Image 1 (cartoon, helix red, strand yellow):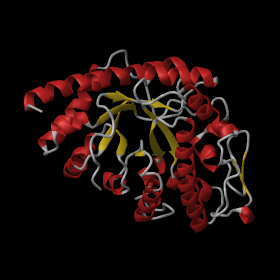
Image 2 (cartoon, rainbow, N blue to C red):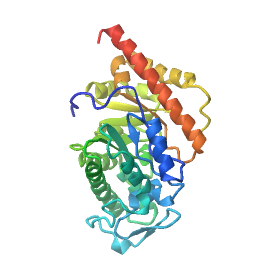
Image 3 (tube, rainbow, N blue to C red):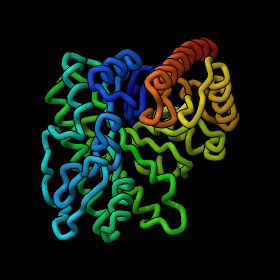
Length: 337
């Protein structure tokens, strides 16, 4: 699919979504300060387990009750892929961070990013909780399509001048090719693709997967933005990545690790990112597009971090984004763009 023109300004940093804060006001202040140009609605599982990934994805579905600890209580006989949500207005405990965010950005005319649990990840959770595999994924697909559309329309009512960027969070897509996975790769791609398609006319779409993955599957789902960790294995798919960029695709590079210490500076992280870009460019990827169509993010959400650690991660992401913008200017001067 061709994507007309630039989707977003270059040199952006952005969070993934989940934060360690308990107070919604503190979380909103955090995302506005660390994402002034592409700010991200927070989810706060430390405040309530109902804001966790699976719990939030399952909230409001007929036949499912989310317990205080975030676990699911499922009445299989009451499950219905065609039933409406109980909470179409995002008024429940699963959406406190979102509501605080939308109140704070009511006058914003720039891009705002929100994340939703993807259908494959939600389907796996339902299946793991005893739902028949066919019903689990039919329900997950129908629910995420309706939720995505409802969420974007809700945001545009609250912040009508905003440019909405909606990401599907799909860690389970990293395992879809493994033996024993409950559905096949093509089924996973179809589920994700259908959800993205449900909002592609009213929002910029993204797909986030922070685990080892087959890039062909993720790109095949058709997001506008692919959100993945910086990983040298991507060079094996340089031709695919290059074509993706040429067609207007963007990549949100998970350049700041979230699985351990990040260090005091960004030099090591910058070298790793630019080394990957150099290797991709050597395999025919456009060096200008690698930088122009780039967003810098942490690898994953920050719910497992302390607030001070989360601050450091996002400060690193912004420093890297500044370097991307600076290098982009240099590359444009070099190539005469």
